[in-house]
Image (cartoon, rainbow, N blue to C red; front, side, top):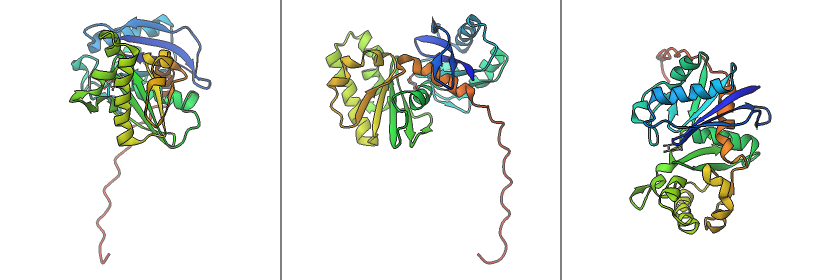
Length: 262
Ligand code: BGC
């Protein structure tokens, strides 16, 4: 199946058509900077421009940098606050005149890495950590995604972890690889202490330069770079869009109270 994957991030909005059987991009990736302020209207207009760029009439899946619960945006760390409580499935769907499935961006990247990349075939507990504008996480137990984990917001030295160790902080503060690696290491030690994943996959913008900081890490968990690098978000978004959107499940009638002795 061919699905257009849209990866909406705090810094850029990217898209490309993807072959969901192979995980390969079947067109060149197209990227536009995330409009600022990143209000729903502005972001939806930019996302639509990307779909138009490919003249794409088929299915679309999307990753979004927030907790997305059944299509509803619940948090807004790196995107305008006015997104909170918006049904993004519905809004993007209306805009594109088709049904669209939106999931958390790190979850999308995780799905792609588990299917086609560094997590392929891995059982046990796998955590994908995206180091980009923020820190996103995707947790897998025996290949099954536990959606919407927000372990990028663990508190470290009284601060939100992503405000210390995201790749955007390295760039903004012009931290050396050494200094930044220490911050990432401290973050991963916290993860290790709480979760003990069997495998940690590092994705996001920083994964392109993994050789500059991965060798400096001291955690005992196995840490590897994402294999799909920064494209994992697009590929995973396409995977999310390839799944039929299930109709709402009717509520089961409450069980009748039992009569007689138990
Ligand atoms: C958000 C996450 C998101 C991550 C990466 C964090 O600030 O809370 O939902 O996955 O950034 O974009």
